[in-house]
Length: 487
Ligand SMILES: Cc1ncc(COP(=O)(O)O)c(C=O)c1O
Image (cartoon, rainbow, N blue to C red; front, side, top):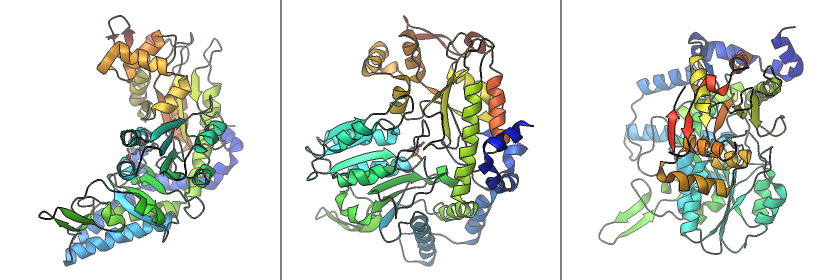
């Protein structure tokens, strides 16, 4: 029996995804040609060769002008942009019920909601401790306008939403005031898929719901006919790699009038006057799309969606589940010669309601943390692309390590504005061995068994090595200085 046989025996559904190996050989051949192992799909997806070829051919073929006019080149651009918009709505089952607003990325979409949501004293913003920083940032708008801001906590060690606490928080809304609940469909830290039933529960308690689908939609189907948040955000490069610079805000049509834009700009007004200092905002998506859209890239979104449809999102999801299950099993079995575990995994060590993102730290035989920055350097030497740090999701990292407000305040007091994640980690180590920052691997459309095995071999290479011999930063707590960096 080979390892691959073991894997297939343990995860027989993988056999139903073998068509993806053919796709890897043709559309993603550059990975193997360059001997690269790509394990950062939560950071960004990879594009198929044909996506860029089709796009390049379209650009070479067509005369495309700025879409804000009625000349032939402009009209052609408008046609392509509107075609892409219709394709996005159709893909998510939102045609007729939602408006698709093109943005720069998911963060741009989140900022649009944050700045235009009518937060008010008496109203609320409810976030989860598992939000990306671009969602956390909405609290700045809410606080400035006097709304109450709360966080729904996570359970440990699974890092799932604490259901009783969330029920209590949801029940606190005054339904006569504007209340916004923002949750991620999938964690970009732990891979946890949060139950989408919360969308309806929150709405029935008088909340508008903002669903951050950025980490969810690359491997899962979101159907807005069955789950109907008021606002949904995503970045297309995470779904299919290309194009970058295009994201989307989907707004339920009945909710569009709730948002009040704090400014106007080119492209967003039907009429504006300098003399009278008045403006009339455009209806629908046009009122939210500031300036000139990324009109040459937007048509590539349609090609990307077609690609996902051809491949099948369920097939991608199945493959990712199988590879994730194998990684969990093998990583947790890794032990040093003295029997101590090599890996500490954050979040669920099972496949229940989770996607293909795994976050972990490595420990040496004495239980000392291996510096995640050194791990990234070593992985890079092995041609493995993984991610390290806090992944712009501080709340999940804090919950994972049980870091509390006192820890945060102590670190800021110690370091002032010089604080950053590596320094914070060193302070936490000095305060009793807590960690901050971790190593993240994530699989996706073009991942295969060989990729995860290469990563596992890499981790095995750290067996019985001391953290000191592996290298990394050593921090002097008294002087707040890194005294030895990078080993
Ligand atoms: C869950 C989640 N939300 C939002 C974002 C922000 O996406 P972008 O950087 O494309 O704006 C990310 C990016 O990693 C994410 O994973």
